[in-house]
Image (cartoon, rainbow, N blue to C red):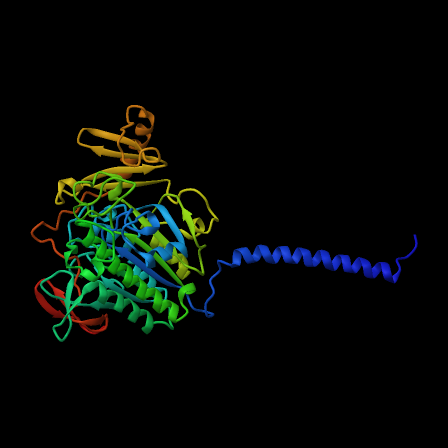
Amino acid sequence: MRGKTDEERETRNIVKRRDFLKAMTGGIAAIGSLSALAMRRPRGRKPNVVILFIDDLGYGDLGSFGCRDIPTPHMDSLATNGVKCTNSYVTNPPCSPSRCCIMTGMYAQRFGKSGMARGLPIPKDHPTMAEFMRGAGYVTGMIGKWDIGSRQQGPLDRGFMEVARSAPSKKPFICLRRDRSEVFRTDLDGDYMAEFVDRNKDRPFFLYFSPNAIHSPSGDTPSRYQNRSKAKGKRKALAGALIAVDDAVGKLLAMLKKHNLKKDTAIFLTGDNGPNLGEQGSAAPYRGGKGQGTQFEGWVHTPAIVSWPGGVPAGKTYEGLMCTMDFYATAAAIAGKPLPKRCEGENLLPYLRGEKTGDVHEELYWHNVDPLDAPRRNLQAMRWKQWRLVKYPDGWRLFDLKADPKETRDLAKDYADVVTSMRKRYDAWTAQLPPPDTSCSKKGQGQGGRMPRGWGWATDAKTEVWKGQRKTKRKRK
């Protein structure tokens, strides 16, 4: 066989180089498609985490979820730049127990909180999300409503290093400045969020924003907000309150942009329960909410958005079954620290990125049976696939939420096998729970935990706090 000429060798080498470059180009493209979601931040710095936990936010009250009469451009921009989660739930509504779930990453029924009884302690041997993130090297801050734990378990006791204070006046949503002038509480909240980010821009932070708005009464909302919507009747005041919250979120986003932190900040947005029906909040396309609608889907099915330009894709919709307990687990994954053993949530990131498909949870449960709570809020239910099983005084009813989101057709008799299967699993789950903790009587109920008194920011080093009607001083640690 004759030897190859120099020309042939060169031609072969050129072909090899072309094949190599072609393979490398394809490989780089593939890697690029994955690394596009990779976190880009200063070396050694962890991504920031922000929780926006809006009071009484209905599924149908955001533009990104179909609302047409209330403009919410800043919150909607989170969906545009992140993932809209259309099948997200709170597992223990309303208010206080819902906050316990998101802050502990557990079903609150696990420690006896099966309803609205305030003042019940949360586990001392299980870290709150704030304690966990603080242990992971984060600056932790809270703005707004706490309503968690006993009077000895205020936010400064359970992991928050900074808590924003605002002295209230005689009106729930109006605060007094030091000079005794009035300011709308939600305006102040937005200023506090921007201030917190500005002050902590050079280190990783965990911020929990839980505004009092859009909880009733929304009538305190200034007309400059109410007049910006197309809403009518009682809904106009609620719309104004939600617009004020959206403006507050806008202040947060503007400060993140100013310091080039958007790609390094994961933002989670959801509500503590369904809409306030008394103020014409909307759960559309579902039925129910706060008031006389607490047996229906709209009471527990809330809008949810996860926005993280450096970590999840933009403009995506995730339809899998998930809940607010998952926020803790996802924050732990972002922080790069193992999740506490008792947490029941799951890391959402693989699902939001498309690395995993299907439901985060195969099923979710509701067991609100606190004898101290209002009877209308008694809720025993289960969600599995498209099915919702819920207990009524006359027995268990079954609904196909995909075909019948307003729960108008009881299919329990038609699908008796589905009812039997779901009942078996529900009974097995509730058998693991302790009885509701009734140690906090109705008369003794009040705001869970002690809140800082005064104006500005309180820290865990030294501050004045409320304890009932008495003022006490926290000792310096």
